[in-house]
Length: 515
Image (cartoon, rainbow, N blue to C red; front, side, top):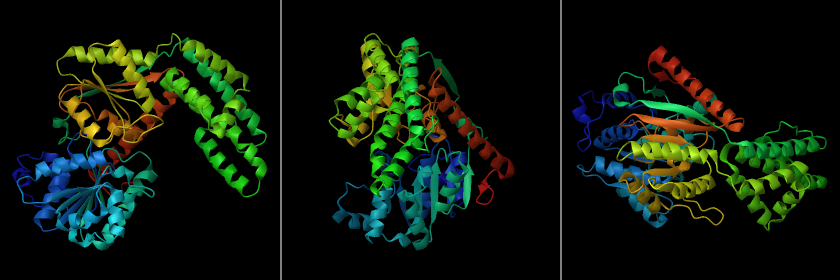
């Protein structure tokens, strides 16, 4: 990498910041994982290194996990390189296969989803040896069988170029980090936090506050009844299925169902009669989570779907549950409660959002919910209760049981309307956590804590980019919300601790000592 001044790296008038120049210089020519908080310009670093590769006559591939991200990168790179005579193309699964070979051959920079790139490599329409740089966005996904992994391996075999992998959070789990490094043959890890001297001038203060919300007596009672129903079902099963105890988690129960199914198919036919009872426990655990983390609306909706279903296995599950005294009591209490129920988290979201919007012209709020149904009920509530909030629901593209997703066009239009102020509140699922160019906001509300440090960091990154920001995490008292919140804090602390140790040792981590 040339050591000239920042002007050397100008991209259509955008002057890179000092830390971006430093990172690009250090990453050039070697497989590097860059860890940089959301909103601090990882894309600019990628563009700087792409420029060097292109100037040297080597083409560039950028892979990102979703079509909206491909759209966004295509727009950004086209603008950054508008003064140069380059062909920049986007390819997704929707691009006709018959057209792809020509696109690959004529383009200097290809931006695509990993599944599409891998498919085209397998079709022998991509010559990786002509590419000098592979950019991997949201690199924390480069684990297991994800397509990032196979592309990285093929790139290192067929090309003499290098890989730039980027993420806001590689995760706290040592195995996860090691997998990313191994799968992408990472030789160097460069970390910047918001406290680094070359980064801190560009970071605005973000205040994070957990708000412990009292769910109310009715919700607490119903939650306890569902928990009692689950415990009694588990106790009854523990005698016949040795792997089950009253402490069995949903993941463990799901694994047990899978194992029992395999054994039943292999000849232990009697196990077919046991599986529905284990399935009933899984359903009860989901109901417990809804009551302890989301509110009664989701529990009611979930039960209605089960009871109205014509699926034979669901019908049998309902029949099993209806023999459980605690479940029957919970169902009756739920039917009575919903007539007058108001979700305490909904009230808090309304209060916080209205306060922020009334503070100043142009204020914006993002509310993150884990469940799409919660976003639906919350939007309806905000529209009914507030005259100053203009909420927009933002979900993924897939459709669910009678409910359409948002296609790419709708997502783009929604983001633009949020940007220009037609909407001032965005109620979003996880689709808005990762990478999308959603305008910076004044406040982010986590409807529930998420036990993933990666998702937590990505959510928070939506505020405090240009002005001071606020982050509120809503936590129902006396339930699994508490455990999720503590888990996220612990994992994030572990990740930051590892980073600090590396920076103290070398300021930059290497393959040997970043573990």
